[in-house]
Length: 128
Image (tube, rainbow, N blue to C red; front, side, top):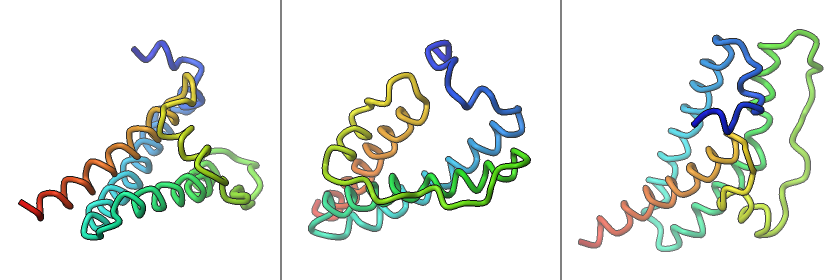
């Protein structure tokens, strides 16, 4: 199954780098899922999950770049986030698994749908 992702940059990292990246991604995902659980209290839970995920799409590249500063010598310290992704197109692209053969694309889509499921579960569990 991983042969489909053999060109992904994840596989250019050392084993320690890959492990660290998985731990970082796991922590960020756990934090976003916890936030989604909390957002399930709101009547506008779907909107808030979309906003939270959109903020994640916008700001998480800086977190990952900071991690790469520890892995690679000579990377300049810089801000890599630009203007926020505009419109629903950026959100749709991420949640529809349209990043091609990329572990990042699969992860982003899975995170969004997981956030929606966790938040919705909390919302509808309270009603029954």
